[in-house]
Amino acid sequence: MIRPILTLLAVLLPLAGLTAGELPHLPKELDPEKQSYSAQKKLPNLAEPYFSSSPENLGDGLQVGTLNVPGTGEAIKALIADDKAGKYSNLDSILLWKDGRLIFEMYNRRGRVNGPHYAMSITKTLTSITLARAIQLGLLSMDDLDKPVISFMPEIDRSKIKPGVETITLHNALYMESGLRFPNNNFARTLGEKHPRQKFFQALFENTEPITTKSKQFKYTGTDPSMIMMIMDILAPATAQEFIATEVAGKVGALYCWDNQACGIPKCGAGSSFTSRSLLKFGIAVIQGGKYNGKQFLSEDYVKLIMDRQKGEGYFYHFHNRRKKAAGKEVYMISGIGAGGQYMATFPELNIVAVATAHNKGKIGLPLQAVLEHLVPLFVQ
Image (cartoon, rainbow, N blue to C red; front, side):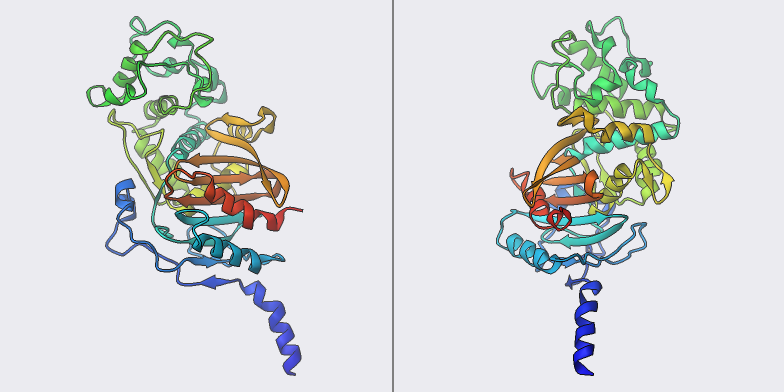
């Protein structure tokens, strides 16, 4: 009887998943909603990495499963060894979702399951997601994307703005092609304290260089998503902050901390912090056509624009569209990416969403490299 039992155990053991350590949480005295960028720097590194190929069901709306495809054990072992050796610098978390379930979860260093992690430029992506929610709720329409930004800002004195500002559309802002150009890169940051909300944009529109077809070229900036957020603040029943709390983060049960700009609206270039599980939920909604847990959360038509591969590679709707290599083969990725190594990446052809966070100095691509080297190849034929 011993041999058949051992054989049965050998078959069942991989199905149970591989887990090491206890799922790490913030100390009880720390409020997740106060885990700003500066607060996160005070978190001590975990003594040992936590990982599980059969993540816990925390009752947070995420369905969980088990990563048990051939090669799983070897892949996880190699990932942990490479991370321990410092190959990916200061990696904090990796999560992998496939076909409806979270199947792998890893935390190290500052990573905590209930600890918001700074998202950097994924904040731009989340601003786009906020717009997608507003369209779904009917606060504006898809046709409105082609309307001038100032048409949504009733306090703007058009007699004082520079020529061409009236041609900047929401679509331009979503492609980082507004054409706004200022005396220096820090100019916009100097205006906020004295110019709240729409007055801030009045000052920008008065001090930009004239907007021309030539200036309306791609330039990665925080000003373009800020125009979108200002419109959210105007159209929301109360404020953009409240809209995010109730209709965006609140609808998926996200744990987050999102700072404000000096002008009073939420930061958009960077400035938000979300738990890795929360970022995963937004990625799931995007790859599922705007649906989350069976309900239409984001505008389906807007998400189609995000996921449309006909645009080619580039930066559209505040998502990066890129081709990457895994297991020697090309995979397509549509992702939010943030400085320091933050990723909310969808792989549409594989029905995979991966989240990675880190506190790297430079070395922005290393967390994604960890995912592409060890986890995605398990599903590449």
